[in-house]
Image (cartoon, rainbow, N blue to C red; front, side, top):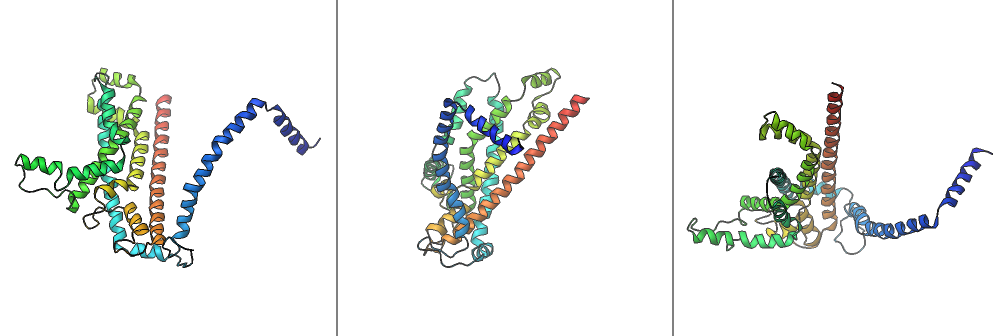
Length: 328
């Protein structure tokens, strides 16, 4: 008997060994997988592919694709000061929210990880509430709080701390600070949960040994906590950066890119050109907006690759150090 016939006989025997129960499990698995796959193809994969196609056309979103212009949309984007302004605002927002939400999230996680604190579940719930609250609603509420006639200005005027309202949302610098502060506050809870998961994965014996040796809070934080949290840190920072790159609903409802597009991010820039004809109005420029979306996606992918490489290299270094300690 040749090899090919043996392989065929093995395949037949394996098929015959499948019990009715196993076949039912396969059928149910397909029943749950196929609808999700179809939804992914229709609402995720197809729009991603078509956004690349649209970026090579001068198209207003209606009618057939006829005016092929190649890389003209990309060239126009690279020459556009409006695009680079939105890119700069996005970077400022990403850096600001990442530093604040990740940093303060770690601080809160360290505090709430202390076994002596009572009511930790209540504090965790309070800090996590903004995460599950709709971002658009938060933006609308915050616009009323920080507006010219908002609660903050009304309170400061009532106690005679200021003589006239502070232009929180009509001054470019202040509006960006407010946007970053609100975005950081909303992301604080989820980053706190991530840090808590990392802290609870560290053996308590290490902290107890450090206390016996007389190590204080800062020494323990520097030489035990932070080094062991490096793999988790790479993941948390990556998630914060990616989420910050795709901020839209908060900007749309809180500032709408004002004043004078000084808080306009790339997502809002893409939306304006895709559905509002850009800054000058007029017909929609779906091809131009698609090109901007492609660049945003490529930049996000680049950041993900960099941090994935950083996370892998960090894990490898930690494994090497552990192996050296075991050998010694």
